[in-house]
Picture (cartoon, each protein chain N blue to C red):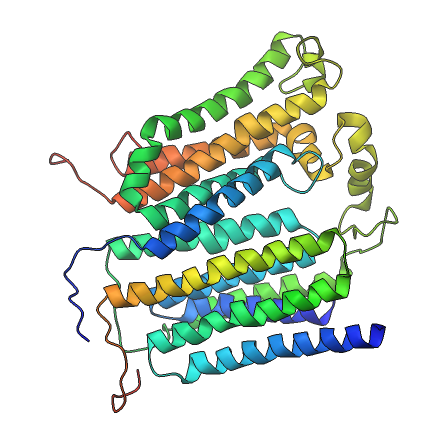
Length: 105
Length: 153
Length: 180
């Protein structure tokens, strides 16, 4: 039982690290601000989401789990909002989205 | 897709909804940090800063000008000046009761046997937190309003 | 210090230097926000969650917003160069000072005075007195609040008035009498 739990925790942590890494690469590699905003929000929603789930599993059922779940809820509310605000600010500034054939910015 | 950069800015429904949902929690947390500062990490400076940040968050979602008008100058000025008055007041009352400045033990006839604790709570909550929260709000509103030289000065 | 601590110190040092060196004001503000976030995590690692919380709210939040609003109201000079020019004599003086101060770090006593988790950094007698006597003297369990409001109440009064005076000073500078 404990081995299964440990394996699940490691799997979740690996998922968190994977998505954080992918979005870090994306922020450097993707061509324009909208694509970058899309990938940057993965860090928090998926990356932090998996890590917090791993924390929940690691602690079992006690009071700390409630805090972790609350944390997850707040991350899921605030992070997409921040990404939306960044993309919206870029749109209000009049930045045109990148289309195929354009130069990278 | 073309964007007209000159069209008027409208508030975002998504941001307003998210802030509406998060702000009560942050405000509660700020008040908890302030009021529970004597027995857990926190205190007037920390809690006051969080309460001030809640107002900045509201201004971010609903626009600086509406938030400024909603809060009003009287609240900000009253909290800042009132905080100093509360702090000085507690100190001076201690002097009036025959002690030194801020000697909370002298407040026992007013506050009961836990006078030291209640005196500290009074200056942390009524003094420091009020000053910090209101000055943060005030600085933001002043900066957001910009500099108007007024009539030829 | 743990690996996380060393990584955080490196992160804070790099972002601090980058804030100074980057020429674009907007980039500098955003890097400064990252610096504040690193400091907030570092304070939490050093068992000062309340300071970390304030650093996250004030340093990463309020300061960044105030600076962003300021460059939105003024201009953002755009140049070709990425890095600002370095004043080498000043950089050497700062570097020597940093090395001097850094060399004192290994000599800070870290004896665990009270047997708890809290490391006692400096002046173990004074710190130990506060940790032991706070509850008996003041009736509160948070020693930091007790020092702030009771033992050093007069200093805190000065601090609070300084914050108040900062608000008044900005009003004076901006030639206005109302906050909104």
